[in-house]
Image 1 (cartoon, rainbow, N blue to C red):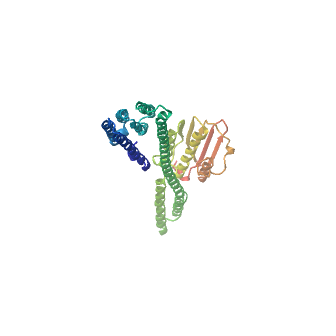
Image 2: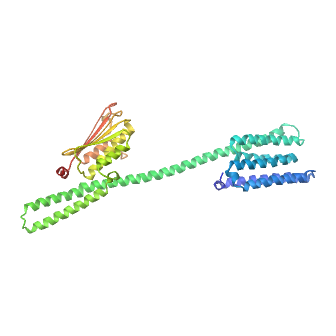
Image 3: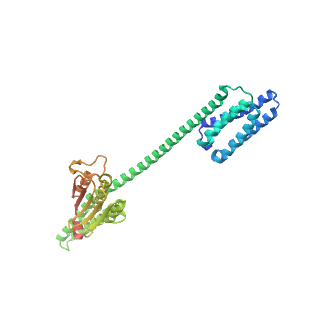
Length: 394
């Protein structure tokens, strides 16, 4: 584990483990000296070697990051401990901190056998130094090993759960940020569409009517009438402002329409939707931005229903230009439904369901129809009348 990720409590536990190891080694050396044991110098030397190897591993970063380095260090530490255990029965107490080191640094499949071997060596050392053969000789080391195993494995389980919760919280925070950004983007696009529709339906239409009325008034006046020049200036000003209003509407066009025509946007939409195909019939004419936006949004909503609800394997999108109208048809071979069961009002969440599509078509003076039956697919058709200027141009 990276030391930088340790909490204050875990740092305190590491310090306690270091102090425990140092205290037990000092106890073994001091007891050998106090008892005036013949091998006291050897016991002190062995305790010093164990302490030195332990200190080296505590200061060596590779022991905490590399399993190979950890295994080598534990092997050297274990060998030195066995020498101390052979010299002094007090060396068996070192087994308890060794349990924690082995469980912490080695994988479970290795650490459990090593802990069992360490407990066996502690029992053998105790008996080898003339200790009485009784249940306590076995229960002590084995109970210590069991406590160490339960403690370390329990902590590791808690740590994994904590990490899982931390990652989940990070994902939730990231998802919330993405959702907020998506909502802002959707709100911006909706406001742009609303402004484009309002400018087209009010300002642009009003300026167009003023221009037509001034042109008609200019035709009824003699050419040499002083008012004719003023009427022509007013008509030209209305025409310039109409062009400016239409420029505003174009700048507020949705991104899908910024890259080209309505047909191009529908073709890209079809390419992004598996199993769908797009076609155009008739001679394309330039449509007002609200018309293009409405037809694109209706096509997006119809294809979304096809993917999410109809379970269709194929969908046909057809854009038809006629003399006095433009039509959009979306037909799929999905499971179908009963159109009479759909609500009559737009959905409360603002989604482009069938009622919202019908409302969008009606706002432009068009018609919206749905033909479907359970098991027979669905056909959505919307027809919008061409404005007088577009009919004249065609």
